[in-house]
Length: 89
Image 1 (cartoon, rainbow, N blue to C red):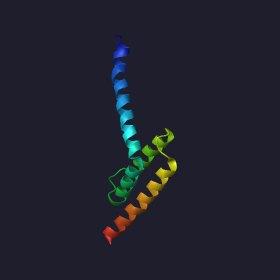
Image 2 (image 1 turned 135 degrees about the vertical axis):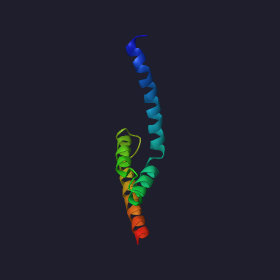
Image 3 (image 1 turned 90 degrees about the horizontal axis):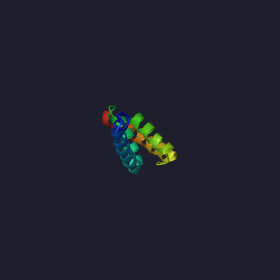
Image 4 (image 1 turned 120 degrees about the vertical axis):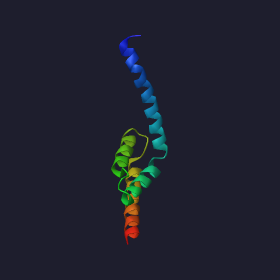
């Protein structure tokens, strides 16, 4: 095998793994967006913006619906901010 072919072997395996992760994320997408964004309202160390962007990438790929992502993110933001308010109160 040539050096280029050997270098491509791990990349091909990595794409299969990434595709499997994307399939899993698409299967729990809306719930995950809601929970991560809601958790970001209470504990700012959670990546709420990153969850929205990642879900939008899955929507661009056709695995999720962008309207569902927007609704899940909005409801999660309201739930997380309301929870933080009541915890602080």
